[in-house]
Image 1: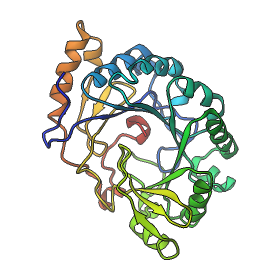
Image 2: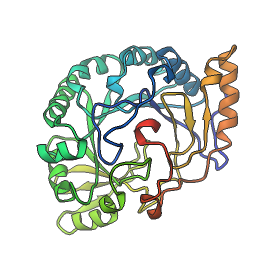
Image 3: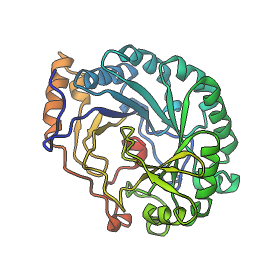
Image 4: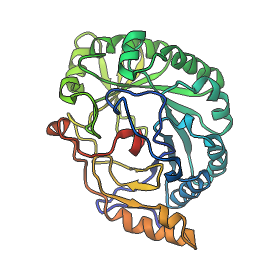
Length: 330
């Protein structure tokens, strides 16, 4: 089949699929404390998610990442993984999962058995009180237990940390040393203007250009050409030998080589994280002759893909999109 190539010549090879908007944390930069989640009957079924993934793989997607919300709270998620696993080596190169780690201790071995070899785990602080403040839940110990279980199961772990000026900026060097000491990559992420939250993002925004400059004052940072399919740019911290990534939607645009699209748990395809432009694939999934309807929907959708996102500093007060990250797929 014809690969999915947008109007700017970028091939879509990486699909992020949200399986639920629900989460067992309430991170202050992501959602309101009193977040209202979607009715369960609005979510795609596990069978529909399986069909959707197959349609994208047939059109050239080689990397598949499952997200949420928190994907490990979705009933039937392991069934989905075990079904999608049939595509590995037959068009699909890898299946990965992004998780907050709370449920990971119980799921690590089953994830490996289902074909997953890498997990991204969100850790914004190693201090229990700070973690509780950021996530509004006292669950750091469970996350750390989950990371240990992932290692034992044979999963490669990467740590994601959202840089927050007020809450964890001072802790970033210690987080890097901890991750690199465990043999994990760590990626720092700037706050993104997605959805209304209870916090003022302008108070929390921390430019990673500034963070990098600070780190370079006492560590040697060597630029790396590495790309892992996501928007991170990498350096090696020579003192630790570890790899450090920077995702910088506000201080440095990362759109020029973007190969990713996202599908929400309701079947809505977003062509860009920072735009509201989207196409509802649920109707095509449920149509007679689903395969042909999906191909037609994808052909039409890819022509709507914008050149770049709508993230900029003014958007910290007025979000670029009304939807939350947990709805789009974190």
